[in-house]
Image 1 (tube, helix red, strand yellow):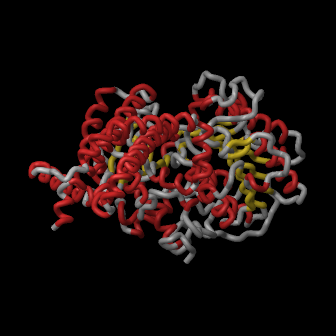
Image 2 (tube, rainbow, N blue to C red):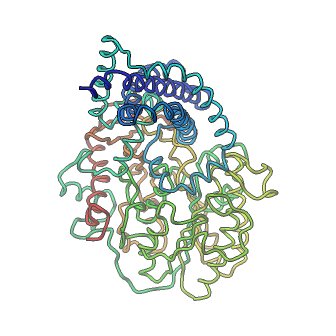
Image 3 (cartoon, rainbow, N blue to C red):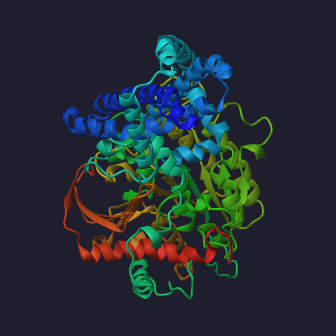
Length: 630
């Protein structure tokens, strides 16, 4: 009975005060994100007022839950301890609220979303992420400002906090706290998916709460396709997947993810350079007038340029997954991040079976996002920052070495492999075009740190230098170079899946082997592996879900794109989006990919979308629920 009286008295008054503090911080955070959306992303102010109001209502249960430790504090600690610890702990509580609010602003600036599974992943890789933040933002100034603000707020709260701790509480107040407990109970039953407010992605994110979205993401960074998405009978799915992939040997009994052995034979070398965040919009070939990519534009004019190729996702691991394994994006976590996934059919393993030596070379630390583990498990020889030649690296930041040093190491490795007389395949992953956008001085006309424009221009400079040095090598004339982005620099947009934020360049450059050409067929990152195999005359080894772009009729072109939960199938100007709760929506996409109008779903396109995504899930089921081999 005494505990019950305390629960309805001073303990809940302190809890109520802490709840109000959280609500205030949540509201200010949301207003700041709204201002960023209006000023930086040119979103109409009026369209975001509704999400502002709705989001404020959604803040109530989250704030009540965030403040519940204060109930335990007041009930479990002796009165003397509470008197001494209440104000210091409340100050820490305020600092945490403010710090998370600022963190949401940083995350929104990078991804234009509330916390999602990327934020959960980032907690695992604290060294790289914290280092990136320290190099990109004035962390000391921000923390110092938060400390000063916390002290001022704690001082302002000292009297209300003392009053809240009083035992003198009337019946009306007790009723208020009882209703508060009901709110907390409602939060406990609150679904871990926020209802969407509108078709405007900014509005949906603005109406959410970052604390809620983080908790939801922690439990949803890998989603079981069959459980959450629309399905069809397995046999129908595999039959359609055989047709859509352009060959007939894709079946549940003959898994296209399984390696096939062949006898080695001499063939051209292949060097794939996957460039961090190199959106198509930065190239003059796609209309840019800032002269950011003169090297890539020259290569595009002298090589084979795929003009309508789209990334499968918005993170590096998605690009690595698409190009190496040719897999449609699965909802949630990329296959690269799955534990113990081995023996996949990859571009590297397919070429290795024909006699190539396959390598993965990364300018950063390959433990990040499990890159080293994934490529090592697929039979690639892995080189990352820890294996670079001593004394080679003159400039690096938290994400990795400057791209020019990455290519210096690549040339060392390429020369070594060429000396063996065997053809080689290298998958090289760059890092420089990434916040904090720092690079060696004197390379380009934008001083470091050069923001996004500097990052793009320096990355392009490094590519140009690499090609010129490679041109002097005896193996150059018999080498096919591929330059492709992992994803775009930004994933923000009004549409549920903003198509134009997935448009990336893909250039095949081999002056002695490949004639210049522009290919305008709509295509996906997953199509690059079978296209390369076809160019090498290895069509019979193509066991990928993707298609050879060069032999795909333009009318059959399509792209597969995704967020971490929504997976889309773009064909023509129609984007079919598969969503959790087995929901399917279709949008007519504008010519520039920036606008999308909801239309009735075309059943044939929906069936094809399911065939790709359910089919990919079926092909991965053999690896077991935890990703291990079966």
